[in-house]
Image (cartoon, rainbow, N blue to C red; front, side, top):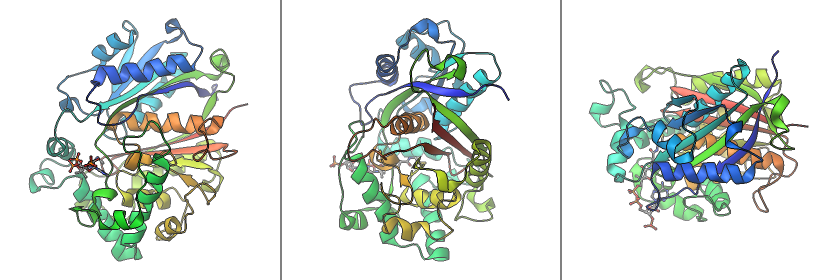
Length: 388
Ligand SMILES: CC(C)(COP(=O)(O)OP(=O)(O)OC[C@H]1O[C@@H](n2cnc3c(N)ncnc32)[C@H](O)[C@@H]1OP(=O)(O)O)[C@@H](O)C(=O)NCCC(=O)NCCS
């Protein structure tokens, strides 16, 4: 077995509707934060991976060189990745492989998206093109619609209720309100969440993630040099990847993501752990139903049991497993290409015990991230552990 790979530094731009910042400025903010966080010189970086999901949001085609120029890292080997909403973790996995292969020692991963240069309706249209442009998109399906289908099926099969869906939103806004980096850091009541305006029934406003601008960055190195950068590297212990057919109509079941189940199985096996050992998780709550399905696909709860567990606060800090205690995509926001890297940023801080009162999972040792592209056509699960 070749030596391991760790995260030795991380940075984050404020998520939100950032009228003050374009794509390159967001990248600059995240990378500057990383440089402030870590004992690092530019010459320490061997390669850059840039994750941006959609060029059309801001009009800059093939944005890597623009971003590298802004962050002062031109001339380095650069890879641009795209896996829809799972772009950020695709970047981390690409960097991990570059190091594991022995080709590079340290790789910077930057995940970015600038979505609010266009209106919500245009953003919805651009995202909808990730659906099948022959069999889905022309019939008017967009992402709230896809997840409405999943929610309707889950409600019919397992008795999942409106209250269970809204309880996910209440929890994620509860923690997001304590996160200075969040797009919508505001508590909401269960009544507000349950009675919000319909978007695609049964998905209402508070069932949907936000359309956000943002960026996050992490530096990965091989373990033998990790201590040069930090006394507390965070080890990447497990990686799993999965996928699924393109159209929802071809799925055997709408109440699970086969790709997430496969990715989780592979990641647990590689890390040598079971779901019960995870202390804190970041899961892809692009819609509230997605968090419920994720809890079941990851094996935290039996099928049909995640909804009741959420109402019972089993995914709050102090429950069975703490989930999305940075606010998740729901309250922290969802700038597509940044999300998976932001998950890594949060979990690293959790494992370092560095999050602060109200959001810290005390004594967290093992952390998991679950990042979904489209409706499960890309799923990446990563397991992190505090190194020695
Ligand atoms: C739900 C949605 C359509 C709302 O967009 P919108 O109607 O254009 O909303 P606006 O940006 O005009 O904001 C109107 C208000 O709602 C709030 N808001 C917008 N989206 C929100 C959301 N998802 N959750 C909670 N509040 C939201 C805004 O903060 C604003 O509040 P204010 O009036 O107090 O300032 C949009 O958030 C959406 O499409 N989300 C899903 C994104 C998605 O599909 N991502 C990919 C997932 S796979």
